[in-house]
Image 1 (spheres, rainbow, N blue to C red):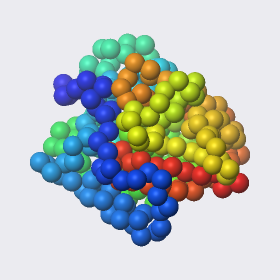
Image 2: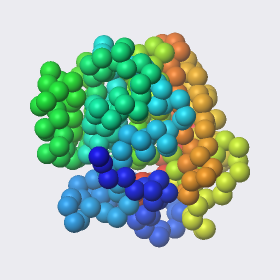
Image 3: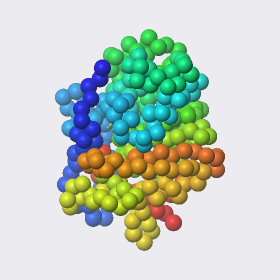
Amino acid sequence: MFNMRGVVVLFLPILWLAASHAEDLGSSRFTEEFAKQENIYRSEGEQVVAGYTVDRALSTYAEGLTSDFDRALAALGPTDRWLDIGAGKGLAVLDYYTAAYDRTHSEGRERRATKAQAVAISIEDRRTPLWQVIAAKLGANQIQYLSGKRLREYSLEELGRFQVITDVMGGFSYTDNLSGFMEKVLGLLELNGSFFTVLQDVHRQDGSNRPFYAGSPFLTEIVNVDGSEMKVCSWLKRITCVEVACESKAQWEPPVEAFRIRKICSDVTVPGVTPVHYQAGTPTEQRFQLVN
Ligand SMILES: C[S@@+](CC[C@H](N)C(=O)[O-])C[C@H]1O[C@@H](n2cnc3c(N)ncnc32)[C@H](O)[C@@H]1O
């Protein structure tokens, strides 16, 4: 039903600038990069920046996220809720409501019945006529599309809580406030709910990969106070009250690491990081430093 290109191409980043990666960034440099990034979000029609993919299918989500994602989504019942952060055109959400989805996910079909409620959020409104048609057909706020704000600008009261949260090349890949982003996501998760996300061109936990582009850093990096590396998976594992699984998709180019973060108790503390490098792109290139 939906156009689906090869996974390799779908995850390929187009770096926006060939800027020096070692520069000492002043705030004006950040402002410049934020403005460029805003133009990427707002690009439309023929002008959509190459590499800014907004139409991944749910099957692509399932391939890119940890291997238990497909089953976790299929297990949701009609009183459960799914949040897709950085939903683009919302095709993954629409796919979930198709008859084809039920045909290929027979396990749990009875229980799903009318299915979980889904909320898609995106900075820019990329809803299509197809979204409008399906939303009207499903009715009763079964699917919602929220835009015009970033995740951090929503309150818990506005969004409510969710059993499953996904982010495929959305806010987690683009945020300049990684720890704030994680705090927000974990605050929106129900106990025992899971956040499924992915990063491309990141130093995987097994340490076996090099940056995809020679001479460039990984797209997302975290360093300790002394400048030594902390892998993203290790950083996630330092969050309290969560269980973290990191899965490498070694066959993909650029390499991809998928993360499942399950909230197991309420007293969540995320180790703080601050941005020390941010370069606009699809996705952005960023480095964070632990604050203590
Ligand atoms: C490259 S598109 C990915 C779209 C979709 N997940 C897909 O795979 O087709 C990036 C999406 O993330 C959204 N996004 C980026 N940062 C965000 C944030 N902090 N809060 C909400 N949405 C964000 C953008 O507005 C856009 O919808």
